[in-house]
Image (cartoon, rainbow, N blue to C red; front, side):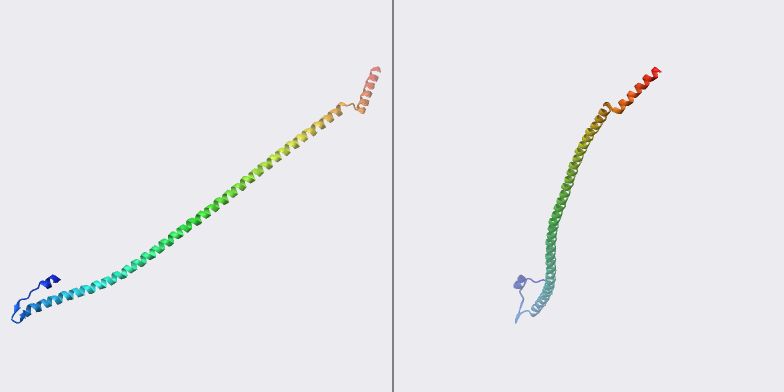
Length: 167
């Protein structure tokens, strides 16, 4: 049974010779005691529930705070990792560019060296051709020039031929 403030204010007891009916008042007092006892029990249960909910709320707030801290830490770590990865990537790119430049430079140097070697070989070939032509010309001139011994041999041969005819 529930008794409201209005019920209490509007409650009327029947009158008896010495005041209100004792039985009605006692009955009403029992009902009020029961209602107040139920209310006290409910209030006690509610206070326990409030304490329990406050503890749960504190735990949830601590978890929430921990999760937020963790999230902030994680975000900071992710940002740091991004920065570190970006720096490492830039270093790798710079190193790759430097190696590529060095390789290209070596290629250019080797190409220049090969060109120099080709030019040196051309010069050597030209010098060899000139020397060979000179040698051949000098031998040709030697062949074309009269050789005194050759002339003597030819003269003797002609004398022999003459003698053979005369005989």
